[in-house]
Image (cartoon, rainbow, N blue to C red; front, side, top):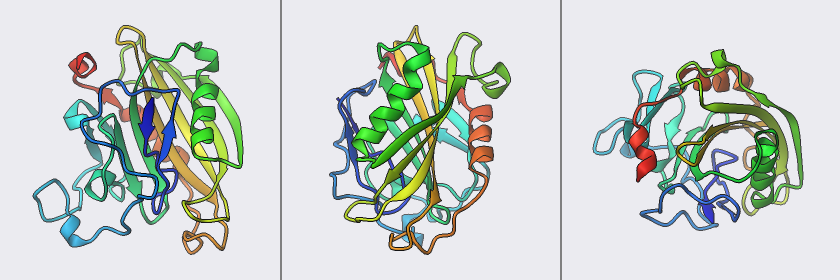
Length: 238
């Protein structure tokens, strides 16, 4: 099954394992073990592109999967693979000041109807994040103008979930909204999941208790989807 390091929170996250959604391609390296989380705020030595000396990005466009996908992200988001190991079928980007995280995953297509797909994926995430509560707040098909960079035949599903989850090793739980988009690529027998995890209520006893709740997740996610493009469709043939 899919082994996932879904970063519901940007620091000290627990790795989760999802038994129902397998990755599109084999992992070349193992995912982080359950006790592994982000190492904390980046240091200058953890710098930008591999081998370079700065983590600072000069523009909002980010390359995913070696440039096969691109989208726009605020420059405060950093590539988590520079801080810890991330499975090959995932891209994880984190925003330490807000505790938000963006995850893109390439999965084998699930045999579930479009109208049930988001509930399926959100339930899957909730189960393996050990969520104490989980709700689907909205689910709908994306309008063409919401995903202008993708071919018209690609079915895009957009929704919002909410979970109460605890960080690894903590008893208190935070309320996290999960903005989700599932791209159903029928010809490629693939589902691409895009999720933005946004803490909306943080327990004072949490290790993130000092982080103020940020506004604007909806705008971040909308811009991600509007700028999202698949440049190399050969990726799905690997």
